[in-house]
Image 1 (tube, rainbow, N blue to C red):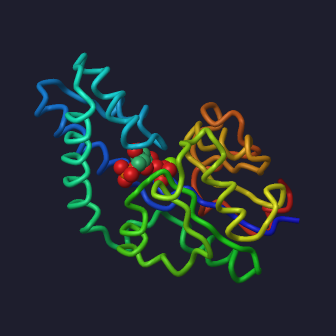
Image 2 (cartoon, rainbow, N blue to C red):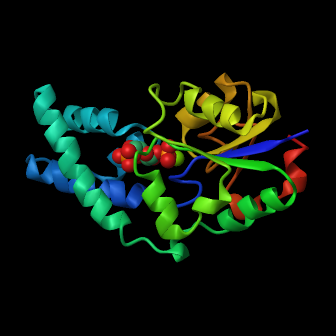
Length: 214
Ligand code: G16
Ligand code: MG
């Protein structure tokens, strides 16, 4: 019997990938190379530091640790400027409704995101109060596919991993859920999210009844 639902943020609740993309592209262009939307796929669910490393590899650029820190900060300032303008109408279809439906059914809810900016995003879209626990990039040391982010979420909720369902759009995120002993609902393409128990195009296709059929 499912007692908790844990949600990834980018790609499940909102689509911030577009803002990450615009900020990374601006950084790549300043460094003298291009960064395409196709390249951006590799960064989904990946931490800021790792994302920068991937971009520098794509551009064939080497930087010192201090330079990398400055570049990541520069990108983050542009990103924060963009998410500062986010509005509740940017919530992905059905996301708010499903999180609310879980709560109405007595199922606990948590956020499990790699982002260090998740509190700001939740505030801008007006969803902070819909989560019983928020575990994000500020609280974890090991990135997905390590299960840490979701295990911490389950712990904060006081629920066993086996009673949890994770909603994820990234391969690494689905892997993290499975590695933590949880059920995983993939948001996206079945051909991509092969490890997920079921794959849906979005949360508007999800219902509380479906939770116990997993
Ligand atoms: C999100 C995005 C990633 C991003 C990461 C860190 O993860 O999918 O592209 O690199 O957060 O974000 P920030 O730079 O804001 O700390 P998630 O786990 O919500 O999909
Ligand atoms: Mg994601």
